[in-house]
Image 1 (cartoon, rainbow, N blue to C red):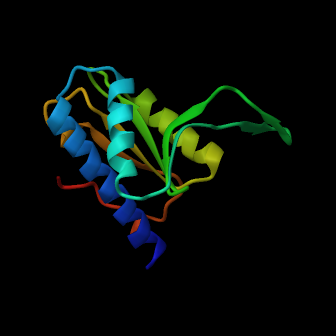
Image 2: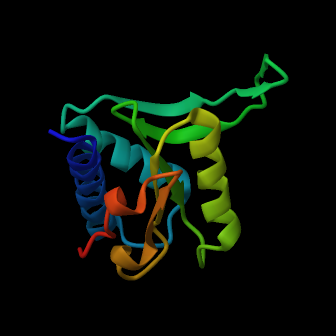
Length: 140
C-alpha cells in the first residue's frame, strides 16, 4: 500500500469515527467530551492512538518542553486537533500546521464538533505534501 493510500485510509477511518461521535452527541459540548468519545471509538479500530501526546520544540539543537500537546496522534502519522468553537479561524489551521512542521508529520485533521453537519467542521491540513499526492477532502 502506498503512503498516500495509507494516509487516506487512516484519515477516512478518523473522519468516520468523528461523524459517529457527532451523530451521537451533536454540537455544543466541550472539546474534552468529544476527544474522550473519539478516542473510545478510534480505540475500537485497533489503530495505534496516543492522546495528549507531548510535542517538544527543538530550538538551537536543544529539546524544550513548551507544554504543547497533540490532542490525538493516530498510527504515528496523523495529528487530530479537536475544537468545539463557533467557527474555525485561520489561527486554528495555523496551529495544526505548526504542529505538523514541528513533528515532521505530513497530514493532520482539524475537527470542529460545534457545527450542525460535521463535514462542515473538518479541514485536512498538509505539510509539504506534493500536490499530486494531496489527499482530497472527505465527501461525507
